[in-house]
Structures are given as structure tokens and as C-alpha cells.
Length: 377
Length: 251
Image (cartoon, rainbow over all chains, first blue to last red; front, top):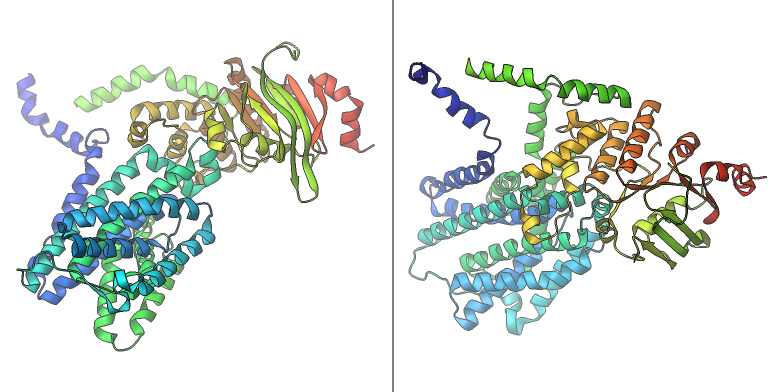
């Protein structure tokens, strides 16, 4: 009898495992999603029509890493930092100077420089995170402006406005090959950043950080050491942005304080994250692709005017007005509209409630056996 | 339920606790005691410094001078999270939940991880989720676990706040106006819950304006006026105290 029904019922367990895999497989779901997205992005070098489009791809991936890295701080804690470009600049100069002066391996130089930035971020974060809201934003802007001035004036070390030429890590490569190599390097970095975001998102650490975003005092009163947690998120976030800065230095090979510490890059990062949706794993990536492509397009078509800067402002205005929670949140809300109402206004007295709970517990046996029989049939 | 007997353990003692805002002494050398295993009440007319007192004890405001001793430890000027982890759960006067997180997620933030490993563990591990669901069932909003906290009614938010406060089984719970802005059937439910938890050993300190509730619920009541204690004792003793009548009626 069992073998007879075997044939017929075989698809059922497989289906339920795929659909109801809330327990075991859900842990892997974001990892699979990241793998799929990265695999799709990895196709770009083979479809890009020319070297310029390939380099544009590198720029967009760089933005994607910056925005996703920013989102480790901004998305979880709600602290909007306009200072992350400072870590980008520090990471790039650190890597450049290490490669020039010590001849260190490029990857090691990037990691050492990013770790140094993470260490520097601790006192910066300790001071900046004492204030909330718009005060925090202003402190982070000040950080960028101060660093820009320092790197411009300290020309003995940084080359000042004359620029710092970083030796290429792969001198034998032709330009398109060089772009392609760095495209994959940035893609790998993006994958790691997305993974770290996911791990935090699912952890208790992430839950506490989201508590900070929603209501910091409440999170604190529930026993979350919010000061420490915010600082850790800030440092992790700065680390990934600094790694992106290091790779950028090696790819672009020419650093100028005016560009490495430009505040507008910070606002682009925030724009990308907000546009995509800071609550979603792929929100900042989506924002980076949209805004990054738009920026490249505007520079290409209207680069001789200042319209590309105006366009950024317009885009930011549109996002704030119509999609304050990002594109992905908008889409999710649209879907939710077609689903039944999730909440009910049930307010019952203590006795009613107890009676209901007892009733629920009592007939549990028959219900489960009924479900089981349904399953079999 | 015996009459308040000061010989039982003191869960919270403040000694000459003072906090000024500009020229106003919101809490003025308040020396009080609240007792272990009881439902303690704190009442007083508007502006008598109850909430400031509350905030000084929970660490949200740093007192200017004086000491706070909780569970025998001097916790004066500790950060709120440290006080919370020392065994104090609190609710806020204006109900505070995490609005854009689901009800279940709200509960899971209340888990207090102690090590790096615990911090990195999945917040939805079955142990925490089971505990959260049990607590949600206890306060009666388990059917809402997947709703965002901002979408549920004010009374339900109030219950959620209570539930998240109780998530870690704190031995001492301070409730700031648990009945404020809540309909009568819900007030009764909160009162039943408080009594049940008290029987299981949780100590309460309740700040409340609803006299009917506080007189029926509390074993020991402290009356505040102008930032300090003017009377303390059983509900009957406090109600008969001329100083209390004077403070409330202004005669």
C-alpha cells in the first residue's frame, strides 16, 4: 500500500520543504539571493559594449559597496552619516601611501589601511554618536571638511592638490582587462558587504540596532547598551567604506583631496540608500545602480554644464517627497495592499481572554489530527 | 496579602535624591523606600515630581545629588541599560514601542545578550521566539505578532510595552501610568496581570493617577508632593492622612 501511494505522494514533501522551509532553508535564503544577484552582475563585463561602459560598471559597483556599507550604520541605527566619504578618502590615501612607500601587496595594503581607518573611527564615533538627529549629521559633515583641508594642505605626504599617483597593481594589463579585473574585485567586496549586512540583520545585535533606530531610549531601557552597539556598527560600516576607498585608489590610480573627500559623494551615498530602501538587503545596491547610471548619463550628456549636479538634487527631492522609505518599501506596500488586513482591534476583558485561551488549548488534539489527516489526503 | 510591613526587604531606596530644572526643584531631597515582593504605589498631584523621580531611578535623568539603591546595590548615575540589566523593567508614561517593527520583533529586542556569541546568534532562535510568544499570549496580543507595532491600537501598544518589559522576567518592574488613556476593560486586564505576576514573585512600583486602581492594587503607597515624600503606608492609612488630603485638595 505504501509503495503504491509512494509514486503519487512523492512531489508533496518536496513541495512542502520548498514552500514551508521557514525553519532550515530560510537561513540560506539571503545567501542564495546574494549569490544570484552577484552572478547576474558578473555578466556585465561580457555584455558591456566597450571599455567605457565597463569602467562605468566599476564606478557603480563602487557606489554599491559604499551605499551598502553606509547602510550597516544608517539602515540599522537610523543615524544618517554624511561623513562616510571621510572613511572612503582615508582608506584610499592609506592604501596609496602604503603601496608607494612600503611596496606592500595591494590587497594587504588595502586591508591594513581599512583596519587603521576602523581604529581611527573609534574615537570619532565615540564623540559623534553622543549627539542624535541633525546634530549628528552636522558633526559628520564637519569631519569631512576638516579632513579635506588637512589632506589638501599636508602636501608633503599627500601630494596636496597636485594629486597622488598610485602605482597600478597589475602593470601588465591593458585598460579593458584592468577594468574587468577591478569589476570582479569590487563585486567580491560587494558580496562580502551584503553578507555582513545579512548576518547583522538576523542577529540579536541587529535587533538591538533596529531598536535604536525606532526608539533609542526605549532600547536602552530594555537593557541594550546602545552607545557601544552604535559605535560597533559605525566602525564596521567605516571599515567596508575604507576598503572600497582602497580598491578605488588602486583602480583609479590618481588621488585628489577635492575628489576623495567631496561631500557630494556622501550625499550620493545617502541618496542611493534612501532611494533603494534602507530596510532591504538590496536597497542600497538598487539605489546605486539607478543613481549611479543616472549620474554617468548626466555627466556624459550634460557634462559641460552643471546640470548633472542639479539632477542629483532633483532626484533627492523626488525621493524624499514620493518615496521616503525607498523603492523597495513602496513595492512591498503595494503588495500588502492586496492582502487581508493583518491587524484586528480585539480588546477583551481578562475573563474573556482566559476563556478563549482555555478553549484554544482544549480542542488542540482534534485539530492537529484533522490537519494530519488533511496532509495525508 | 498582609499589611505593609517595613521589615521585609527593601527593593529600592532613595536617599536625599535631588534634581533641579533651572530654578525648579522637581525632586527635592526625596528619601523613600519601596518593598520587596509587594505592589508599591507612587501617587501625588500633577507636578509633584513623580515622573522625574521615576526617571532619576531608572537612569534616564542624572540626579544632581543623593543616592539610589536597588537590590542592595548603589545604582546612582548608572546608564539606563545597566540598571535594566541589574533587574529593573520599566514602562514609559507615554507608551513607547518600536513603531516600524512587528510585535514579535518588538519582543525580541528585549532579549539581553551577554556575550559576543549571544549577540551574533539569530534573534529569531526558537528559544527566544517561544518565550516571546508565551509572553504575548499572557498579555493577550499573540494574534498580532506579525503586525507592525504602529498599526495596532493604543491599548494593544500598551500591552505590548508591558510584554516587552516583562520579556526578561525582571524581578522589579516600574510602571509609569499603566492605565493612562486605556479603556476600563483593559485596565482590569492589566490589574489582573500585575496581581498574577506579583504572586509569582515580581515586585512592582506603579505611578498612577487612577486612584481606584491604585488603592485596590497596591500594598504600600508613597505620596509625593513638591518633589518629596509626604506620607507612606497602606492604602487606608494614606487615604486617612491629613497631609495627603491637604496636598490633593489644596486646603
